Length: 220
Image 1 (cartoon, rainbow, N blue to C red):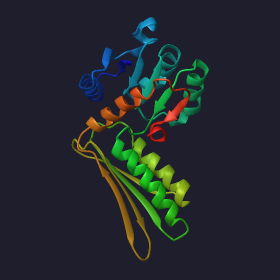
Image 2: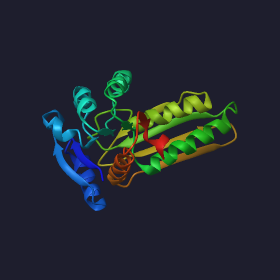
Image 3: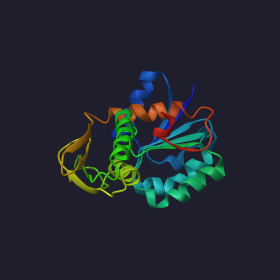
Image 4: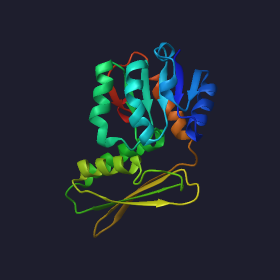
């Protein structure tokens, strides 16, 4: 059975804790400063990281060197992706990452990839709108960026992304594909952040015996 240390003990960290408890998975520690964790303890644990882009940028070398494996739900570090991957590869530490660990969102990714490929060259114009709570630090969201990359690759058209911040909305992502004849809409709405925590814990269970670096959707 895996053991987990949570990096970042905010709202998401607390939800991950509840999901670990529900599944009977041992939580060794929840830390606001993951670099303060004893490396000897970290060596036997999976790190689940839900921090901030700045915190992850500072912490990823420590996580790569000292943990048994890592699950990273923090976004906003795509510009240093090569450095992050190189650190985990050099340390031989398995890494599972995602812009969104929701199982429903990963199903959306698959549907968007298929629909975009079917409509390639048929004159469809893609647009993405993402709506999140006012506390979200990055815009566009990592999920919207991933959707945009999928559409651009599969449809051959780069979508415009609109970001809206209002209230306490957990997350709504909508892709529209519009032609002269019709419009296709693909939409995912999160009711709470619990889906992200559930997916991250599922990812942690997948690290047993895993090697290398994987995007969560590839493993589903």
